[in-house]
Length: 112
Image 1 (spheres, rainbow, N blue to C red):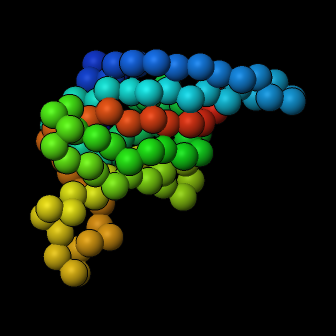
Image 2: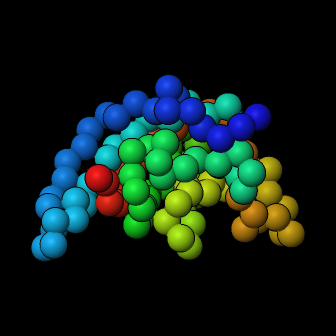
C-alpha cells in the first residue's frame, strides 16, 4: 500500500473565498477511493487533495451509507487520519487506520 493517488480523488462540489491578504480558503466535497489509506504510513495528503494546508474535515461516509469513519486533520494540516471503529479495541480506539472503501468527505483549507 501507499499514499492516496490523485487519480483516486474526485471533486464532487467545491467553493472558495478569497481572504484578506489574498489567501484562498476552499471547501471541497470529495469522493475518495481508498485502497488501504488513512493511517499514519499510507496517508491521505493535503497536496493530493489540492490543498496547501487543511484546517478541518468532516467525518467520512461510505458510499453505501453503511458506515461512518471518524476523521481528523493532522496537527500540521498536512494529512487526514481516519479511524475504523469496527476493528478497534480499547487500546487502538484512537489510532489512525488504513481503510479500503469509497468515501465522501468535506475538507476546508487553503489552496494556491
